Image (tube, rainbow, N blue to C red; front, side, top):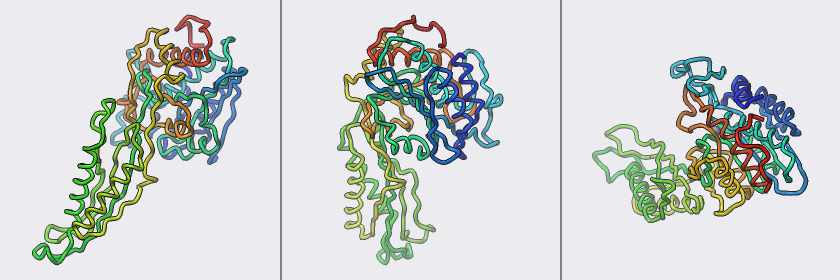
Length: 391
Ligand SMILES: [Zn+2]
């Protein structure tokens, strides 16, 4: 089975989320793991939301996890679903493989399954390789990586989480600090402002205060434009002639590696206290949807990053890093203390949109890079020349 054939089967097993049902794609994942020589088991959360774990235990040595999510974003509604062909039929044009999830992240999943099969056929390494096919990444991971984390499956000596990075390694990722801020003043006639307490001007003062604090924090050239306050939603007031009595802000500050999410939540609270005192409004701050997640990065010189660079050198791939700007399940592995890279074929900019694709050459290079990274990680010599086939 070539990696392209495998990708075609994974794409055909639609797994749009929401609504979320990974049963068909999980069956193919488990079958591919079994055919490749790994021991596959299925871990259920909800009955429609299986997660697959494939294991290849080869004596003493470190444990490496390759993880990719099995679900995709929905194909879009009729109005914006301008697919040139059936999104569940992998279609090749000019070396590009089009299909729903081909880029995000079934290409990475297919590459991991192919690389695992090659590693199973390779006799000279020692350690444990695990492949995790995860449910529910596109809608919060509660049925997927969060479950794996609760079950203790995210703890390993290293992990590679599959997302489209153009086959470069991403060793650092932004977190986010999400807050709901509610200003409560007093509505009044706009002609008699002294009779009220203006919640919208208080919100403006809050935004300015947070922004001023962020300007004093260190920047990070890897993540241009951050730290930055993003007010993703602002709702307040009623009509032009009324002094607005309330205003709600939904705020996001991306957390740079090295920063703590809690420190940014403290900036929200400090600004709220100041504005409450100065503007005479009530200003409450609460975490929004759990308050976000921490940033993470790999320590320089870590074994997995060195292994990746050794493999890239061996295969003539560039050493340039990439900083993945989407969300990913890597945060759950990082939370367990596992040094985690994000890596996969394809470009994030074509994901979550009609006519998503992964270049065939990228997909095939991903298999080589994963195989050789694992071998270098397990400190084994390569057995076959690069690109010697899909298995
Ligand atoms: Zn993804």
